[in-house]
Image (cartoon, rainbow, N blue to C red):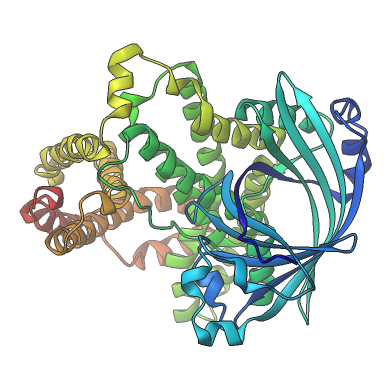
Length: 512
């Protein structure tokens, strides 16, 4: 076989999970039955290769050999960024045999990784075994390949089932992917999946089922257009929200916590880029983000109360019968709060909201709203936009923080939100203002903002605890808990004051 170079292409797709029992209902949907060509059924076995220490995976590159009907196709894949939602680069070539042929990888991201040591260490790490039902659909001039996949990911010691439908745009408008996804979702519940089969394979390999995903760094270069920067940040936030949903629904506190952080970061992103957005869609999106944030709030409040108050008290008073009763009572309440949160996240409303969010970020009306003036703002270099937003946010925090001790509970809460928004914006634009001195100032500012935010959050938690204590404890237990709250209001105010002073004294990192 001729050793030609791999052909580069792009995948633009939506990946949606479904209940295995719903496969037939999806396949019989009228939109698929009216396909362009005869339906195709395939059995695919794909082997993923890496070194024992997963060097390719750590570099964000995936090497796959897929067998289908006697043919073997080698694919190198790489996302445009770690948090890319829809678009991935890939390089394909047909090869002879089941092992990688590494002579035709020029121009792929795999090439610079293949040192002699890595070449010699490559081995199959896991495989996917898939029964695929393919449809080719034409909608309003766009061509979409629909693949209904059922099967499993398998390592030497474990397996994990796969049930998903992939909608890949072959030609035409991205909007048609979302229209088709919604049409299918009217038949069965479909949940957007942001992890590839390869990512899930590595999680299974490493024993990281229900993996918690924290916010990833974002590479927003100074010359990037402000509109493109908004998409990059929003995708990053969306990935954090969606990737943590399974852990949150399983009752894991850190999964819920990271999902809420993703929601707050996305809301901050929308605020930071407000002058390039706009339109009725934005208001609907913001309302839905507030709704799901509220739905997750009670469970998080109880997690914090248990971790910071009840658990320390139980350790210091192991034989206290009142505390034992209180703990059981709050455990029952926590379960109810998590059921409420899981029900909301599992609802049609939330699943539709996620699709709406991704569509809005990718091709929403904001991309055309506001006429020439706003188009100019979207097209300008993000460094200019970031400078204005960081300066504005910093000014607001400094103005309110200077009178921190005189603020009411509600005013302190607003200051905390502003500090958090500035902190997130600082993280969003970390790569926009490179250089060692800027990095040092940025870290100093972030550390002070985090300390101030934590202290203000502690003050807010005190108010929340008073409500929880009044509502949930036996009369004899109230005094015990109130006497043992670890951080008093005076101490927290002092901590917030000191952190603010450090923040105010630190030079704005982007001006260095």
